[in-house]
Length: 269
Image 1 (cartoon, one colour):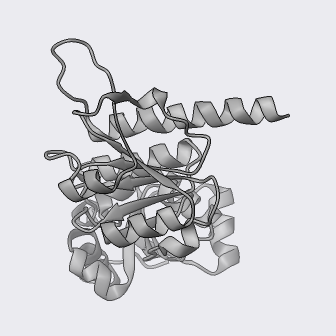
Image 2 (cartoon, rainbow, N blue to C red):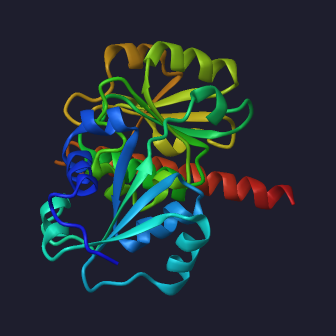
């Protein structure tokens, strides 16, 4: 197989997809890095288009067989081309392009007792990716990011999600008011994290339909969000500690919800 040079049109497009949000939207593609993420994408039947492997590297035999069975093209790159394209300093030896997805709220959150995690204007890619990863690990139904949040297919978001992006529906650019109305209509109440709240996060019943609403890293929940949540909660902290990272706060509440739901399920048996 002939290795692709830096001047190859596929490689040039790959570089644009990694670096430019506009290019991702126009092409309807985003880039994943590493065999682990590629395996997650293939195992989740994601729309994988092309796979690029650094010269001298090889894919796991099972993964290679899966790609061959689905007809996904695998391209070898000339020396140092991958390093010039990837978004990390020491990239993993595999990159792949995947078709963009944006789940719809109505399809992702049915009526009932689901658990949804909402990020309001989350701006840091690492936080957004960790929120997706945490929500999936806690058994949430879906993740929703409102307008003003970082693009879900930003390479840093994709990496931080550690494959969870392929395991849970993620809704982007939701208008807060319309989202809140829909969630209420299907029976979910909104629980918002706010430092000034007096109710502790573990005093809420999460066995019913709940949407955990997390605010912007710098400003917290907006006035609009605070006016629409049904319950505002806080995480008690040691004296002198003002706040914790939004993704860490979300994890605390998500796993409290998961604990309550496991307990309720075991007592119903």
